[in-house]
Image 1 (cartoon, helix red, strand yellow):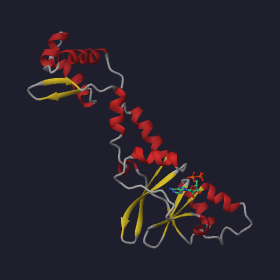
Image 2 (cartoon, rainbow, N blue to C red):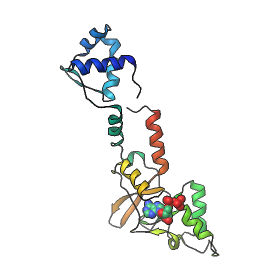
Image 3 (tube, protein in one colour):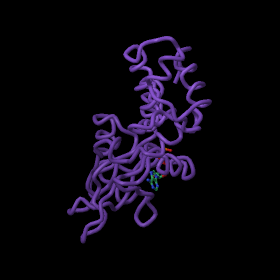
Image 4 (tube, rainbow, N blue to C red):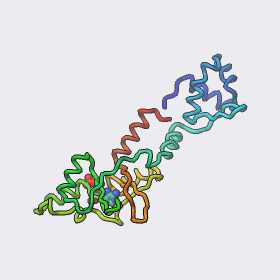
Length: 209
Ligand code: ADP
């Protein structure tokens, strides 16, 4: 976040003299309290300053990058997850390829009759199956998928940064968001590298902190 000159000045004053009232900051800058109000609101919302009623403003001592880290560490999976694209285990490889094109995704989750996760098929899994001589209409995806329990999953309340880490460490493009049920892990969403890229862009474009 780019601070204006005036905002920098306010921070300096509060660093030196805090806790200090808005009135006194305004006096020092020879401005009215009303003129200063938007700047104080921004600095407080962004976390540079804290405001205590009847005490005044004081400096939190946090740098821009510390505040950015704090912001990112609050992001949860459920705020950013996308709708999952799923197929049943007996879907043919041919139909899975068609689904991938139609739904414009790179990872498809395979589920049983309870919508519970049994496997994952990626682009490369489908390519690999396609270079053999088999009739792709005859090969069901469960033959070629990566299957449970070897699937990396996440849950709604997980931190997005932890899921991003899993994507990198496991070298995969997508992770299903699951819900624990008596029948197994129900697939309720997906987080992919695109999800993380979008969050990254949004963070910068919205000038989040
Ligand atoms: P690509 O096919 O483009 O390389 P991935 O890197 O996501 O896509 O997939 C690599 C391998 O990892 C594939 O065999 C796929 O089945 C498997 N895979 C994909 N997602 C997961 C996951 N969430 N958990 C476990 N394995 C996965």
